[in-house]
Amino acid sequence: MDIGEYLRQEVMPTPFCKGCGHGILMHAILVAIDELGIDFGNMLFVSGIGCAAWIPSPHFAADTLHTTHGRPIAFATGAKLFNPELDVVVISGDGDLVSIGGNHLIHAVRRDLDVTVIMANNRVYGMTGGQLASTTPHDRITATTPGGNPERDFDTCRLVLACGAGYAARYSVAEPVNLRRVIKNALQHKGFSFVEAMTICPTQYGRMNKMPVPSQMIEELKSLCISGTRAQVMAGDAPEGKVYVGEFI
Amino acid sequence: MNDEKKKVKPTGRMMDGNTACVEGALRAGCNFYAGYPITPSSEIMNLMARRMPSAGGVFIQMEDEIASIAAVIGASWAGARAVTATSGPGLTLMLENIGYALATETPCVIIDVQRCGPSTGQATRPGQGDVMQVRFGASGDYETIALAPWSVQEVYEMTGRAFSLAERYRMPVFLLTDELLAHLREVVDLDTDVEIVERPEVHGVPPFGDTRTNAPTPMPRFGTGEKLLVTGSAHDEWGYRRTTDPAVQRRLTERIASKVIKDRVELAEVEEFHTDDAEVILVSFGFSARSSHAAMRLARDAGMKAGLLRLKALWPFPREAVRRLGSSAERLVVVEMNRGMLRREVERVASCPVQGVHKTEGEPIHPREILDVIQQR
Ligand SMILES: Cc1ncc(C[n+]2csc(CCOP(=O)(O)OP(=O)(O)O)c2C)c(N)n1
Ligand code: SF4
Ligand SMILES: [Mg+2]
Image 1 (cartoon, rainbow over the protein chains, first blue to last red):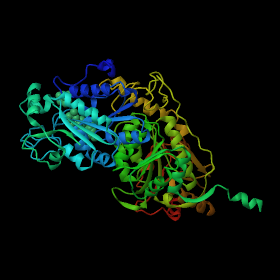
Image 2 (image 1 turned 90 degrees about the horizontal axis):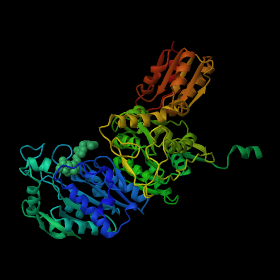
Image 3 (image 1 turned 90 degrees about the vertical axis):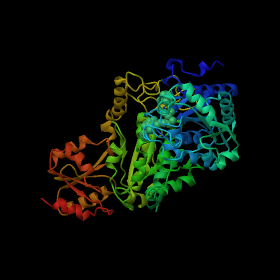
Image 4 (image 1 turned 180 degrees about the vertical axis):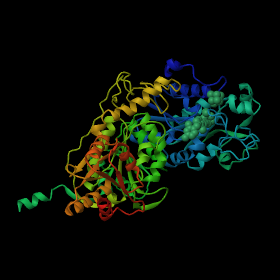
């Protein structure tokens, strides 16, 4: 099917900045759904607050629940438990899902809630002006860490694996084919599945970290990501400044 | 013999307020409970955990109150009659998502078993300090419906009523009880009429009202091909986010307020005792209204013309009744386990002097304390 048919044309184009990675992820998700032939009319997309939360809402021509900041998984829990027939997918940002919403994330994993969570990790709070997220790498500049981030960042795949996730995968928007493949696998997984899409926010993170041009950020993603296994992710032994990507099952 | 039998109704059962709450909810067709334990509401949750599966519904203990009300709202959009129960501190955590339920016109019921606060306060002791939290706790501008039972029977009935009001007005409805009612045991007649408002399945109708009227539109449901757009951001009648259009925001705030205001007189239920000739009228709600009723009787026995206005709903506030009695009586005396939350409202509309009997020490108000104020002149 033409991908355009999954979108509410009346709201296009998206409000995302030029060069934002959220559009690449949006495309990967829709192609994955199309290739699997999932009934879009039976899907519910739940998102929180942030630029990434706008990926499904209002763009996807399906049921969408645009909730409060950090809470989409909790809303999704109620909808899925009451109507298990619904195909529920949560799409939101790193700030939303693992900073303010981290508690709901780990509990959904522990419960093995049968939903797919897709996290757009641009390593920053894009919408509110580039503040520190719990996924911002050490030393990186944000609006609230002008001297560099003094803290460590979360490896969210490692976190959900430690909580017992049956399916976790991570790829960047610089590898859309792999990203699409793991989204497909996650959507088919019975039980909790998690996909982390490493992505770019040229407007905030890029400008503050001397990568104002989107292509510079894509290059950074390419050099950042190295392939790794579940055991390597769980050991947390990625070399300094690198992130393991792959399917961690 | 036969007459004796009639007195004890066959469906009458001895139970406490928290149990009556569960019975009332299930009777009203409640089929989803999400919550987090907190004294003095926990027995509601414990009992729901046991009862819900056999009633064909879903029960889940969430990780906190924020998640509990979120799950309730998500379930409601999936078609559930959903409820949560909590107490003051838990309600505080729920407020942001209660605002979301108001903005998205989501039917759900929130039971607040009040305890003495602020903060952790006295967890096992009664209070009535959430009067304003339920009214103004969430951000922005809106109206609320909050019911206030005074007996275990009424807890049962009003829980059912809360569900039908939630459906009818498409909004969160509060049931405000307290620690005393929660653990008070009385005989309850379970065989009373409960109105069950069905959700008609409609298609192609704007989910957030047509543009001409502010009447609530039927609550749609996920998975029915409606491609629902639900957002807590400012939205038009189809749910499209329109966050910089003054007209869209104006319409939304008007809508969610006017549907309650329009039926204010009917929603603001009261019960009056001896108000016709009363010189001093007590104004109270919940358990404190029982103390007030006893005080009124003591006063009457002593030859004083005392009456009682009992609020069965705190919000919308029964302005008309208070105004009327405020002009017929010499004094109004507001009786409540807080420092004067309801009294502020009464003072705003009553033309006569308003006094108060207030207690915030985790103890019920004794009728004698009220009688003292009635006797003062
Ligand atoms: C309770 C609450 N706190 C704060 C905010 C402000 N806020 C909006 S979006 C956002 C961060 C979003 O970051 P992320 O989820 O990473 O999305 P991105 O914009 O980066 O895609 C914050 C803090 C809010 N909307 N609600
Ligand atoms: S601020 Fe960043 S995340 Fe948000 S739309 Fe712009 S580039 Fe994308
Ligand atoms: Mg982000």
